[in-house]
Length: 281
Image (cartoon, rainbow, N blue to C red; front, side, top):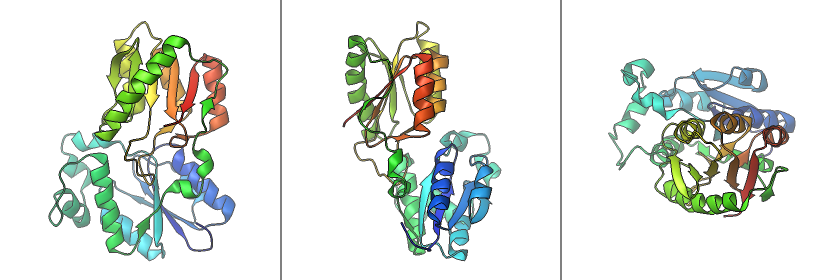
C-alpha cells in the first residue's frame, strides 16, 4: 500500500480507524474516509483527505463516494454494533438504499445466514462488482498485531493457565461457528460466551454472573479468520471492562489480535493487577 493512489476507509466505532488514518497521514497516502454515522468518530474528519458520513445501510452511497474519489482499494476498521439490527423499526430508522436492500434480502445472491462473515463477504463482493477491492488495514500497520508473551508484570497462576487452555478451545470453536471471539471462564467452567453484543458487554455479563470475580477472558481469532475484517481487537476499554467486572486475566492470540495503544493498555493492566497473555495459535 504505497504511492499516491488514495486508499478508502470504511470506519466504524473505536480507536482502530483513527490509528489507521494517522498511519496513512504519516506515510503521505491520501485517505478517503466513509464514516458510519453513530459509530465512527468525528476526529477522522481532520485526519482524512476526503471525508463522508454515511448510514450503516447505505451501501450504494459508500461505493459512490469511493468511485467519486478514484478509490480502487479500501479497508474496513472499527466495530459496527450489529445489535442495531434488532431495534424496533430497524428499516425505518436506517432506511437502506437499493444496493443494500438487494444484498440484505438476497434478491440476486444466495446467502445461508446473517452471520458476520456472510454479511461482510457479501458486502465486499458488491464493491468488487464496481472494481473496488478490499484489503486488510494490517498491511499498512502490521505493528498493531500483538506479539507472543506475557505482556504485564503479573504472570498467570497455575489455575489461570489451566483456565486459559480450557477457554482457548471453547473460544476457537465459537469462532469456527462465527458466533463470537471471546469466552469468560473460571475453574474450568464457562461463565459467558460472546455473541452479538461484543466483547465488552460479554465481560460485563461475566461480572454479573460471577460476583466473586477472578475470571479469565480468552479472545482469539476464528480458525477461518479473514484478516480484512472482524480481526480480534483489544485496548484500554477492554482492560477497563475487565476491571469493572472483576476479571483477572486477558488471554489473546499472538500475531492475530490487534492491540490498540499497546503501551497505555499494558500500563493500565499493570495498574489494576490484570494479566495480559498473548499465546501462539
